[in-house]
Image (cartoon, rainbow, N blue to C red; front, side, top):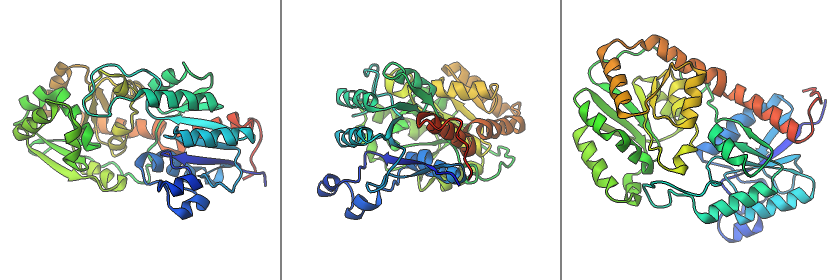
Length: 373
């Protein structure tokens, strides 16, 4: 049996060190046992992939300070402490990989809608420094890959993934009464709905919003006048606010039916780097998605031939698409099958895990080395 390629993960900047313990960043036992993650991004980009790779000769695990690794991935981790560990590991011959999920490289420009939305100059400094320490970068979207390529010669776009074993099988859905428009995300991101504010008002008699999110106190971070405008919007459109409990519960909500919407303001550098995961989750359940022309959404639409995810570049596109859906002329069966199919072919965990295997073997110099199991 051949040796496995071992890859450790530092996630969310949680470094298992004595300094982290004394500063109260981690629990004492995590110093020796490694830091687990509770974030959705950590579970998806690390946990789901790790389980998939169990029999493929590549082992992903939380970084353990007493173990040796062929490579260590720094996922959402670029703090001073993360970079110090990266430097120490690199000196020992460990390959360092920086997984980039936000465009910290491009100086923040455009309109920003809440406090701390714009990446800071300090974050940009940290990202550039972490890239300089790394042997390779993983970019979570094609747009991020282009931004990363300005700072490193070795960049690979590896998208987010959906574990279809967690997604209920697609079941046919037909509208009765008002059209259910689904949206999910952190409450601080609810301002995105204001990008189609007038359209939602126009169709208020025909649609209802289902918003799956966390505490609305986050709206206090919004700059004026967005909170006031959002409260007026909710007062004019029927809606339900459901608490986010878990990815599994979210997928159950999607499987019940409706049309997912993901409007976005595309007037700032931060928003442009977002991945397709927000739309991929409902599409995995067979839900049709309507979204703004975000670069990652355009990638999905191209791969699906324009079916399953409808790109709405302007208010007129949102109106036309909603009118078609409400008229009964919309081919839901075909569109829903296309939504599920594109996720299965390009964004399912086994497909994305294979991209991880190929990249890790390449970075660690294992190309052409066969694995016996």
